[in-house]
Each structure stands twice: as C-alpha cells, then as structure tokens.
Length: 124
Image 1: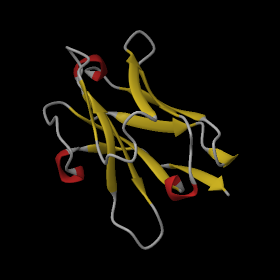
Image 2: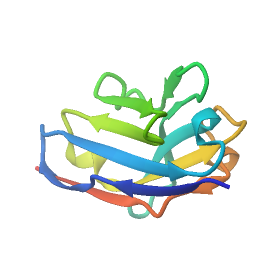
Image 3: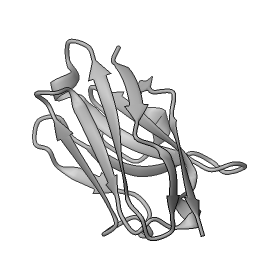
Image 4: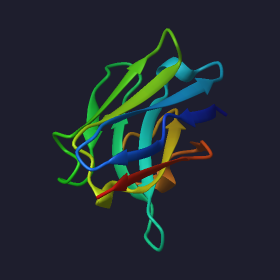
C-alpha cells in the first residue's frame, strides 16, 4: 500500500494558479500510477489526470481541464504534482491524490490508495 499526503490547496481568485503536491511513501512508489481526482459538493468524484510510473505518459479527464492542468512527477522526491492554471469557480472541489501499481485509467475504482484530499476554492 502507498501512503499519500496532499498539499497546496487554498483559496485563489478566478484566473489564478495553484500547484498541488502529493507526497507518496512506500517501496514501489516510483513504479506506481499516480492520479488526481476532484469532488465538488453534491457531485461524484471526477477524474482529473493520471501519470504512469515507468514511461511518464499522462492522461487527462474532462475537456475543461485540458490545456489548463498539467500533471507531473518527481520520482526522486516520490512526489506528484498538479499544476492548475486559469482556475475557474467550477474548479472548486476537494482534490484527491490516488495511486495504484497496475491501473492506468480514469475510473476512481481502479486506484487502491488515496490521500485525505486538499480543498481548492476559486472565487469569482
């Protein structure tokens, strides 16, 4: 199992940027698929992005985040990042980091390990 701790959330005005970090611990972190999901009040958990462990390939969720959000990882630091630019009020949600040794996809059910989440609030 991988332990995950998110940080970097906060309150930002529309058009601003935030960078979320997810510090991972465990023996196989560097090979794990890492992902970001978000959940707004009253809505289902939504896939944001994922990055593979070995190749560093990435996939993104809704068209609304493509071109604005970028996922990256630093295996030397066991950390995955989510750079979020041009934030909008509809990006307001709790953002969760997730990890799995095998699953590389958009379904939250495929990820075995989860962090506690970090709140992102975008004001208009």
